[in-house]
Image (tube, rainbow, N blue to C red; front, side, top):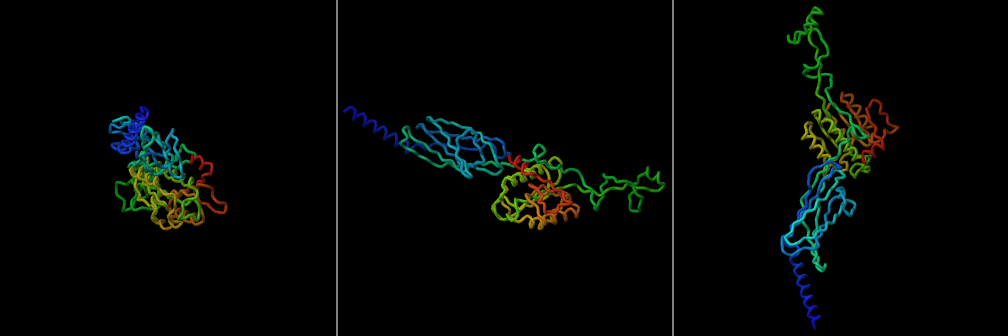
Length: 378
């Protein structure tokens, strides 16, 4: 009889416990999940912080969070599960009454892009595991991973574009650049007279100034990794990621010089059909904006490169043009030669080798070997 009474009491206690947890387990539970920084470079480490607070008298002996995010955010030291694009990270807690706990995850940002904490599911259970309750938590946290610029310390180096260039003609001569002396003309001001040369030549001589222009550069990225790749995702994705890092390295090289810079590419940051052709500016804020643009680039060309180059041919007014491309053909080389004939210095960074059937004479082309590409990708 006593055993039956004890069993009845236990059943009542178990029933009350199940009822309490089924009704109150997820009440007054406050969860927050956020990243410590909103912008980093590839390979840098940040923190993901989970904060969980139980604001009631009912303890939570078993509590689980399931975080869903990008596979390119590597949670160090976790047994996470990977799919093609996502990473699932489980996290376990045990909370007493009115207790607040936090957990810090070390996260390595493996690849450029914009990543968010997509979804978090909260799961809890009672003391015996009879009742399981779950709910989704709203999370609003993201990080923009900027491409790691390739520079002089990498296997692929970039040319530092600095200084001023002499041009054929301009409306105003530069008074700070002297190329010699010449005979005085009626239109010359008197303050331009070169008196030592006048005394030596026994006739009025004036300073000869050179016509100059401030050097500027356009970085032109071809998002096609191969010919006939327009409108589809790039085939050689690693190659184009290296191309983007090369562009970042070129941006870096202009930052210290204050050189005006423009960026153009036959791709976009979203799924629309637009292409990229920025204005020509300079300064830290502008270059940082270009890095953010590179971070968001889609690995898909929106227009064939030869068409994009031709359409924007006359809009490229910089003194220097750097083309970053995964392939070359005769049509691209013809446009390069035309630009060089117009007085523009053109340098091509080719991610690969020049096809033997192409005649690239007269063009400045830097071949980046497959081994260098692998080292840069690593």
